[in-house]
Length: 290
Length: 342
Image (cartoon, rainbow over all chains, first blue to last red; front, side, top):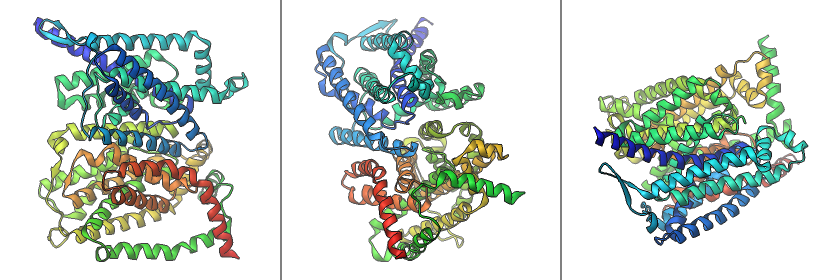
């Protein structure tokens, strides 16, 4: 009996780590969607780029991880500013989406060229390598550290969004762009900031989450779809708490489902989506109306 | 009464869908007349392809037919103002319908096509009320999600789909019971289906319903105020688009005698979405001709020139360049129509 509950606990921790990973990626996607009103189809590729950087810099030390994170943030800044510049002359949703599709395609192609189309395993830093054991079940220490860091990111995001001037400006730009503009907030600057920070969140999640969900062909599409589901379930407005709950539900359903009943994982996810959309009748329309 | 509302709908449609630089009456006519010889050449060339090219190119062209149907499906929704990424889900419904029929001994091609069209239409009717609560970017988001969920279900519902390994099927048969196995035979079957579907779509796009779709795309509040019901009208577009994709699914099975989740993967959805988007990018209006031209361009660039592995890169570069060519394309068109008139 004790062994069963330990299994549940370990699986639950796995789902928690997966859910928090999705939360960070989804927060970035939501930021770009909310401010730019652009469906960024390269968002999953940003995550892939992050995991790949983690692989390149991984040398078994925390310094390697920090270097990968710094490189990732630099790449996200350049990439985000570049994307903002590329999207600027385009007006239609489809044109903008197709340009992001092209950018994501280039990243995915580079990755497949370098990895030879196979999955790569990113080693954990030595300090965080090893397992904690619960009643005979090992749980990687790295995942616990990841849970702590991602939870910190969530708290920091909530604080910035609700307690700082930058957060207030951002919420204004998302909720009512014309009024924000009349108050003297620069729409251009907020757009560039949003797309840069949004991309940085995806790349950063990739760097830190690489030992959890590593670089592999197709991981970009998986992460994009799952984080999109989180954004849709998270609903309208800049509600970090709702986004977090949605991410944890999707992470748990996907991870626990995959462990307990592999055949049912995608169905249960599908059922959760349908259930939420049916229950919350306004949900879908307001999901990105903000 | 009907004529008045239709006329108003056409006003609403024209108001927002004709770019300022579009050529007026006679110039536009000149542009259209100029396309007839080109269209005839394309049809003759397509029919004679097996005589002109080797089996590899013919096989490639057969698979391009499936992408063309997906692109048509996506573009039909674009006409109604709905940017969709998820038509592959309906391709999946159609394809696995054909697989189930083939497994139970029904290999007749047209029967499979009809059944796939029916099941994908049902799937569209069921999902439409949810999906059509959204417009614009939200619609795009939700359809990306549908694509992902459709793929995940195809991977995991192993009882029907065979999982990632896919399922093999016997070749389809035509009325006389002969199996369709030769590469040119399969190709002619595919382009015949494409031609029929294209003709039906062309008729549909010249109907009053299409005018209403354009009205919804242009200014939905005004259409609603005129008494049009968006969910019903756009639902019709959603179902018609799903039928096109479902037919594409049945054709996938007929062409490859095999189907796997890879046939409805993100990459396939991306190609279809890009074909429709690039087909609208040059002149800013979603047209079927544009979608077909973009489909051919994508297949040539990605699968023919890029067969050594660089295909995805070429495809990505196509996505990154074409949307920026609109000023040049518009200028070229103006110059061409002026020259024809002079």
